[in-house]
Amino acid sequence: MTRTHEWHDLTGFQRDVLLVAASLEDGEEQVYGLAIKRELEARYGCEVNHGRLYPNLDTLVEAGFMEKSALDRRTNEYRVTPAGASLLDVAHDEIEDARDGLDARVVADGEGTEGDA
Image: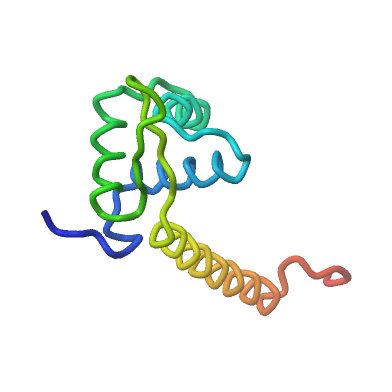
């Protein structure tokens, strides 16, 4: 299997799974499949099938962006790895750069400035 190295190599769903896992970790919650599933469902407003979630979690584990360990006999815990955190940092920087460019364009076009009539 080819190892995924870039943000753009992930599917949108895989990106969302990684983002949700990181946000759950940030809240210091245990990150397990059903917690990720519930958060995705809240974001999407619809059901996320197990058959979609777990293969994508496995792909992220195989790519080295997440790790999986046994919480108990039936439940696995997931953690974002340093490689996954680095990937999120790069994506964040790219989004910030794009936002900065948009903000600069809006100011250059005169939109959003007060007193122009």
